[in-house]
Image (cartoon, rainbow, N blue to C red):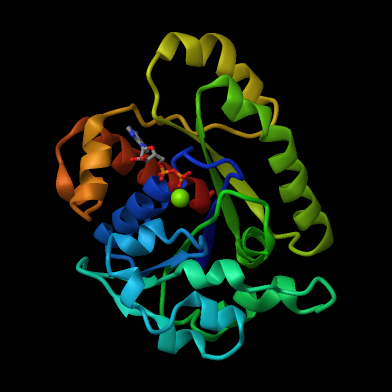
Length: 250
Ligand SMILES: Nc1ncnc2c1ncn2[C@@H]1O[C@H](COP(=O)(O)OP(=O)(O)O)[C@@H](O)[C@H]1O
Ligand SMILES: [Mg+2]
């Protein structure tokens, strides 16, 4: 099982949209995929189920009350399963005095590694213990990023976090790349933003342009690959999925 975190400590950068469509895109390529939601806001979980009615979620995993296999749900998409989150996760206090705290997710995933080809982790908009758990468990990290000033302001902090997890805990962690999302202007991107980002991270050749159908797909509780399969953003996400697969093969 290859484990990929979709991370950025800033909200609204396209983590959830990217995690959903990467997970679905990999499933469409005949992989068995587990989508893991570690964001208490539970946006990606909400695409597939009513999170308010969930009796158990990844919260029980972090509280060490339930085994991971008992927390996984099937989804409407063939090959795609979900480990959902809910708001209760926000209440979980993993003590920094507990030496096992960063390893909960990694240890749990090792129990089910035979069952999936990929696990895709949708991270919260913070560098919290949940993002640390995701990065500690992962082989790769993908960083969705808008081509805007405020989006690149936090890029150094994110790079520091990734590098320190790599150095101290998970030397196998590789940055697969930054994915530009919600792209409005190619000129601004290539002239001013891209050179800045490339100082910190490799950047995927594919970027995702902005389009109302992304918001519509979330409202209709579908991925863009399902909601508007022939639309611009779906084609871009499918091209991105191919780039991810090629990046991993290297
Ligand atoms: N390519 C896009 N075009 C238009 N809107 C987008 C696009 N990608 C994401 N969005 C919208 O931007 C908001 C933030 O995206 P989301 O994936 O939830 O980011 P994050 O998980 O990083 O907070 C959402 O309302 C989403 O619908
Ligand atoms: Mg999100």
